[in-house]
Image 1: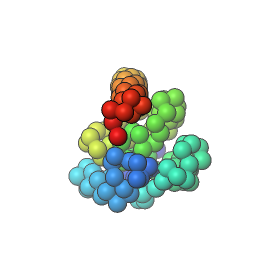
Image 2: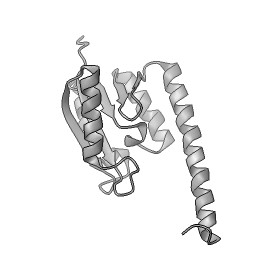
Image 3: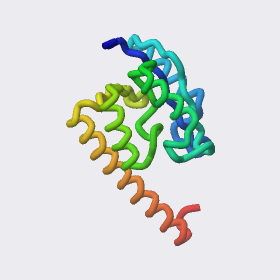
Length: 153
């Protein structure tokens, strides 16, 4: 079995809605992290939210997944976990798939390394994501309520 890290980057942007910026900014962060970790990027896969919100229907992610299945990639650097999906169920399924395939993840925005094969790490990550998503949803509801009341423009 080949234990060499075969690294690719993955970018999904919702620009102009993405608070993390455009493709170039994310690509720069991913390339910098690869350099800092001594990893060589074989490719960077890009999806724009306008192309598809569904994980299954994104061309860049589909190509990345094919390369993971064929053994061309076993390490993915992305800007943050939301680059994969905002849906907690999809995230859970994706972490499970990555664990089965032995794929490791690096997050350029927080300089984190995630090994989805570690069940504690996976479950902690999912719980943290669910809590953050709940807080984001609450903040959005407050903002919307204030807009409706004329307090926010």
